[in-house]
Image (cartoon, each protein chain N blue to C red):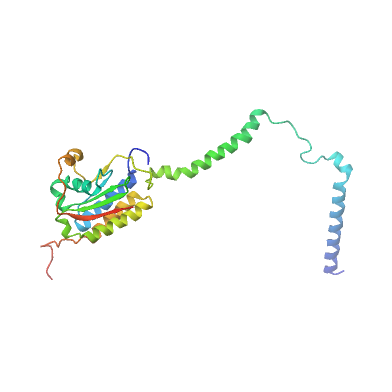
Length: 131
Length: 119
């Protein structure tokens, strides 16, 4: 991996499209970080999740450290009710199996889509038309 | 004379003619007046031509094939290979606007969930 951009334009597009799909289909805000997780990877990922600010409680953070070969999925306290840890674990496994084959962007995209698929969509009130 | 007889006669004639012609072409008298292809070597190649043909063309083919092999991966961009490390700058999709200061002033999320995995 040469120093420089982590992803080509097309790979970046793939990740961005998956994040947008998660937002549209499941109203699930997903943030994806790809880089080094200093020290304890879980603690580092939790700090990154805290850095998301106001929306952190509702946001899922996917943190990937390709060098240390670690992936962390962090769900905020609010979004955790919609997305349990089993679904997060399934998404993490989806990603690692793609990462093993060297497909970083594709793995992230399918992981994000897996998260979106398993998130309970909050019922939208006042949009039903009575028959 | 039937048609069958005629055909048989023609076939026999052709065989005899071919045999005779081969004999004539192989005779020493024929060889003296008609040299074989390649018995006259003609003018030799210059050094430049020799190098061009015996070094230039193979080297050119080598470069061409190497390019054809590597072109798809060059076009696809850098590729992550597990176990070879990671030196690219961090990327944050959908992250805070000012990531550095946000991380410095951030406190770890409490009460959240999630999962960890390694590969």
